[in-house]
Length: 237
Length: 321
Image (tube, rainbow over all chains, first blue to last red; front, side, top):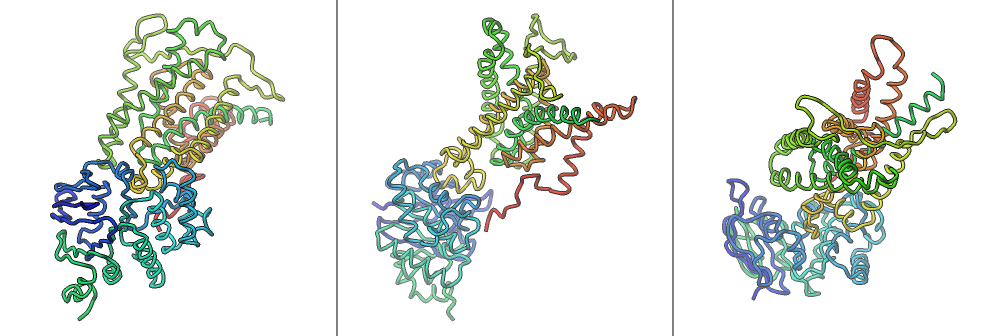
């Protein structure tokens, strides 16, 4: 049984349907990516899975439980973490306070302290600036913080929304390397990206979204070499 | 005007301002989290006074205690009244409108305010039995301290004023601790900064909002009892003017900032008392002092907002990078 199963999901903003019946699965230990242009419905899909939006129809199963009507804060407690688009760190709190909020539902002080120090060894820059207000970090550093914060709940599924958005090429590479590291340590990841090249090259499974529907699905490596994908998303003639 | 008179006015202003500040905290916390100007907060304040008085009048043994010993018991009654009303208003009037356009909850708040005022007006029994006659604004007597005021230099310090300042300080110290050090306090900060992301951390934001209403109402109940002690009365419409002044204080200090609420309250209270006192005898028939008191208070608000639109302690922070 898949860890996450999305069945015929429809999501609407008022009368405008942003997601028009998509289905996919994420298996334990897999990296699955959703790629597509702006407005394809990628972010809407993630926000619906994490409970911030309610679907108009369809079904979302996480670990065998139906969650499309579960409040967002309870979904987190089931082990589903979401690092949102635009990073959304808490700007007026320190880096350490941001990380501790990521562990809001945990009660094991020792384990939390251990994970904070793990986050600092994964991203040393965060450790150096631990008592600085998070709003003062650069875009790339904020992205590191957002990912580290999402990991603080020891998720069984990590959803990353546009982690490379607006970053310099060097920073983008570092973020992608981090995702590769997480993958090799066995973290299950659902990755939404506009940088299709990077996303597909590390994903086990990829889905191409076009205006609210899945247009194409396949293994990451296969999609990467698909002629149509290369034309539309990788900018090749 | 002598220095002594001036200091006397400042002293009275601090007590008045501390009371405004205690009420203003409730406006500012709720605004900081759900961007609602809760116009019914003045009525939560009024309910606190009546709740405390009800305990005093309806439980006779309380009346035979020394007032200082009776106050904690009255405080419990006042807090229960304020908090219950605040929780009910949040649950049944504001929460259903959480995702409605901003104007809808605002108008609802005005409706809740009028409802609560009229409820107390029509229902609250007079101490001598019977009810207030319709159309009559009869304030209800509140117990006051019997002892003489303290002297400090030439300045008189009323016992109730001293108590007001002490409890205001204790309340603010508790709030500072609560917000910075407790788990719920940090959840509250997170919810104020970014409610959706707070939910992604596992924070039950509906609960956090209730906590903000509860704390605000509890502080308002404390303020209401200090009002009763200082003026010797409570009335069904006391929440209107005190609420408006406290809202002014919250804006003056920078709405959303809990310390700003207290600073704004103190500045407003002192300015009000000093202008009133200084201008009181300036012109015999045109009473520039007491009669014009509210004019000076709101003139101050306008001037401060022209110079510092974000309020005294408000910060302009780029919330999203």
